[in-house]
Amino acid sequence: MVALCHCLLVLTVDGMDNIWFTTFSELGGAQATLTRFLLLFFNGGAAVIVFFVLSGYVLGLSLDKHALTIRRTLGFYTKRLFRLYPAHIVVLAGIVLAMVALFEYRTFDAASAWYALWYHEELSAARVFRNAVLYNVDLNHIAWSLQVELAGSLFLPLFYLVARRLHLGLNLVVFAALVWLSWWSSNLYLIFLHCFYGGLVLPQVQGQFKHAFCGRSGTALLVLGGLALFAGYTLAGPQSLFGRVLIETIGGMLVIGWLINPDNDGRAFNRFLSRGVINRLGKYSYSFYLLHFVILYGVSYALMSAAPAEVLLALPLLFGIALMAVTVPLTYWLAGLVYHKVEVPMIRAGKRLVGN
Image (cartoon, rainbow, N blue to C red; front, side, top):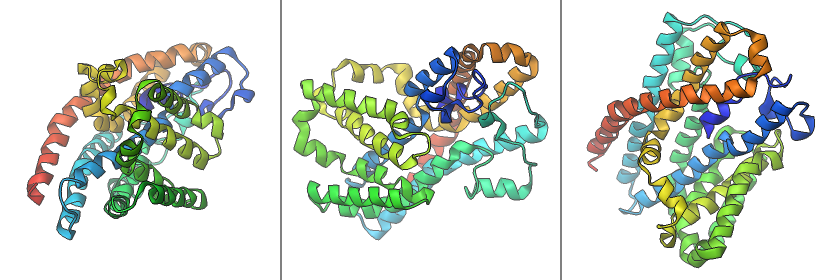
């Protein structure tokens, strides 16, 4: 969803140069209205929130396998670094090489304000270093979520110890406290912590409300969760990061809660997710996520260099869909290479290093 969302944000649509931050009441053209409607379903921000919730759930299950000692906690941190950091460095190296060899910043009349934000500053060793250590993320802006994921991983062992020792009622109190922290804080690393805790407590929610997540009530919860994910940004408003994150976190918990219920294993939605291409995309998703934005930027750069602005501005939605058709398969292929050549070997190296 992140990739499809970004494809629709490249071009100015009906005079709206930042359609993502435009409310429905401000829209003035048919293409802008349809684009904004499609962004309800291609809500990239919601996909990121689901990833954070899913991280809390999956990492919590991995910690369930052994007693959490100091040694195992250090091992957990080591494996997370080996899981997340090498692909980031490889993609960043590719971006730097492309900028040195191929890139010259240009402005385009058809480009959106969102597209024009990136890569206008000169490349320097200091800038590359700041991006490599994730102090800045202006060379691959989607790496902001990697900053959050690493911060969430840092807190996760502590959250795990708390969550596994409390009953559901008290865990909901802790979750509410983290929601309050998200509302109170403007710090990027603190705003999303409740997403990870929500994932951690999902097994407990499943244990007490297993039957609610199957049958008709399960379908209702799945639909409700989907609506929260699709409409959270619109309901909360472009300026309310806290509201959007909270609505999408609850939506993500409902959808994941339905998916992990064993009574739903044979349902059509689960069968769809287990299909070959979809299953592989799940494996490649991290590399895909790191790669797509920069590939989209390059393909869009070539498109706007070749096509007259008036043509692009006349049919921005059509060209946005064309960008999807070109960049998604290309990114999928490259993500497969990075997954097999970088992610898998480094994940194995991290496990060998900690003896697990």
